[in-house]
Length: 278
Image (cartoon, rainbow, N blue to C red; front, side):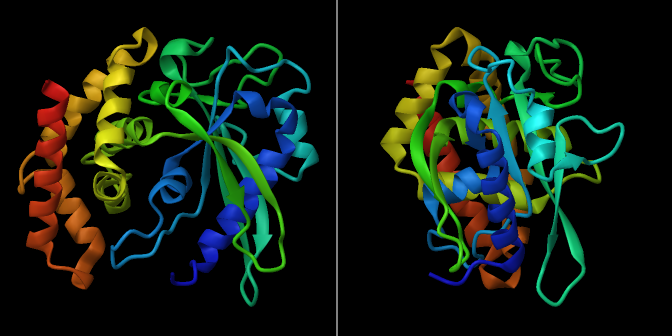
């Protein structure tokens, strides 16, 4: 296994800081995003090593206590809001050896369909600051598809490790598909989001992914997100010319055959969709 990128190492340090700060609320926290995907699939056999510069934590409002306020716990640990108007983005300043101080974000997210702050960007969790977390569509699966896993430091001198809920492969796939679709055609569109989806399709045990996805489709609170995820998977990855296949191939660049990546992504997609139709 190759040595992780320096920014990814910092992102893991900051994520551990945030998880420790939220210790009193850990029962309501689920890790999602790229760091959850890498815990699930590792490096697989792709030419690009895992890389991310942030951390994403879903909060389950039904399990979240009111004390201590989330913003109090985070500020005591050295975090601060990304800006006066930001929602759910918490920053930690880190010094990368030999370089300037970097601002590493951790996002606190609430599935939009179960959020107390329905129809608004801010989740407005009772007992907590109005802007401490934000509503996001497509994350509902993380509340029902997760496993306890160990999150550990990537730094040799840091012995920290903590057990927390990590979103399962179906929940991660659905969430990433929503994210990619929301950013499609904008200046926030990222090749890496498509590559993360490709990692899930390639690296997760297929029968397990199918079973988990079908389960989410049968739960009232996650059904809409799961159904939309299937439609997005078909549109974004269903053919070799689909935008998701193109972005995944572009993300790997000269390290792989772009046509081979497109074909692989489309075949994996159609195989999954065929199983989900049964």
